[in-house]
Image (cartoon, rainbow, N blue to C red; front, side):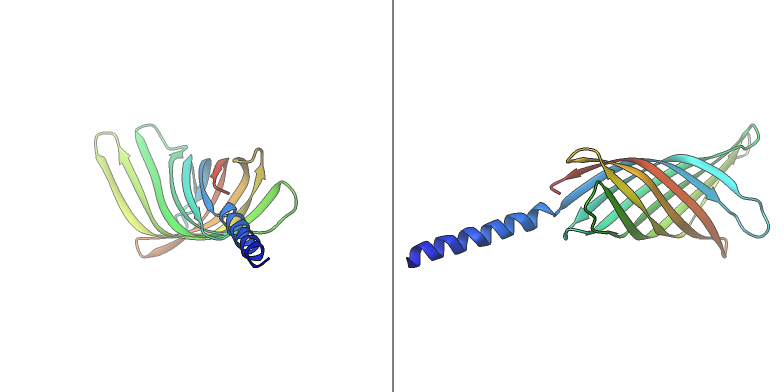
Length: 180
């Protein structure tokens, strides 16, 4: 009887451990990205369109650490002018528990941003600055390992040339999950 209880206890512990590991894992996403850049100091805002990718590691069922890299090209500039924005951010993401296929989340990311501009015949220049993004979104489960990021909206703060900029960032794309 004692051996049977020990075997049952070990079986129960291993089952609980296996369930806990089911919720751990990582995700990779690829997204379309739209950024509304507001330079500040009375200058009008500009549109920037491109893509973003992220990698997330989850050590708990709903809490993960996300690393994100995004790039976009400023649109609507006169001929001969180009401008790009690159962002590199990292921070926590928290998913809210639901019973359906839609999984809302919030996140706070910190890092940097590079802004570059050039003109034909004059070369180009770039500058780096602190950046922070706070916002959230919703993932819709398509299959066990693939989700559609229906929307992700972030307030994107940057600090170029001693002045803070308040920007808007919107993303949508696909998420691949492994081990979750």
